[in-house]
Length: 86
Image (tube, rainbow, N blue to C red; front, top):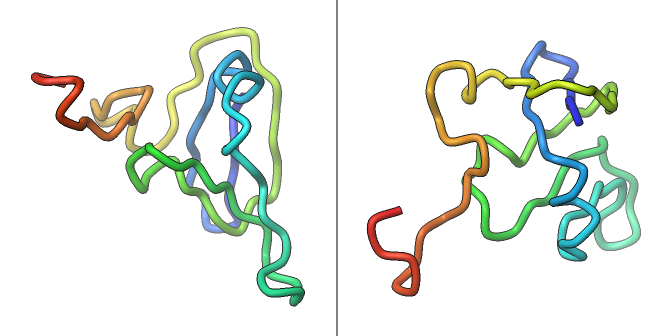
């Protein structure tokens, strides 16, 4: 899935990742108050936490977002003690 922000920022997530990780959400309100849509992706680096979402597009190829195109890891998983060397 390709995700687009109002400022031109982009990122991506695999549909399989979104389907199996129940913690990934699109937030549209906070404490009962509306906010601009943003992606919440616990356990992933900030470049996956896109805000001001304008479009979510299913794609049939390996879409590379802003930072992924610059060489950042596509999965953006934050390493911990159980995954040395990541």
